[in-house]
Image (tube, rainbow, N blue to C red):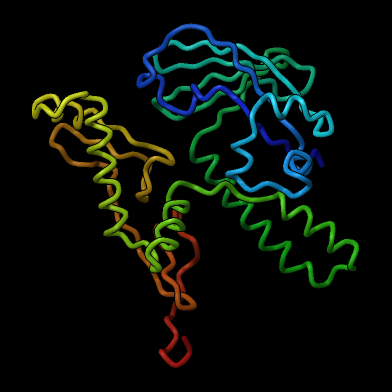
Length: 278
């Protein structure tokens, strides 16, 4: 199995919609990566947490020869909502990615093989869900493994974590701060504030007409939207066509999303057990 690498430093130009950046042209992207298990060489031998990792500078990383940093430079071409960047899928083979920041779609192209791979937000989500299933299955079977094999599986599980979405991160922070799980009212209030802030930033004014026009052009998708649908945007009548509700069920004393299936954290328990058995 190829060991996982951690990108420590990269140009952040692709983390925001291109239209918001207001830049068109060519950039040189430089990334520095190290093996995940070698990050401890930069922090006195102990594996760094997320905050410590982000605090590592490029100069510090490049100076740490024991970490075996790998440097890669590639070109990024930006035009409107489209981004093209070098992204070989295999070592030694030319390849590039075309990103549509409006549609949240990516195409990985392999010219030598005359093929491409399409990757969407739905694909990323499905991959995360499959990883959760695999992790659960492996944990269930670990008990029957010999000690040496169990240690290998535990080490693999340590590095095999499904990506945590924006809603999960916000919910975890909310519960840590207030001591109660985040509910729908809190999520809707949070996103209402984010929609207004987003419109104010784009309008660059509190003028009612300009703010109204900015709100009409709202498109908040992906991890920026913590509600259970792809994007927050408005149709000509001012309605949010993608808006929908979710169904929760209390399982083992906690609220769990059970519907619709594409955002469910667990299957619904039915028939519902009696109070004495909950």
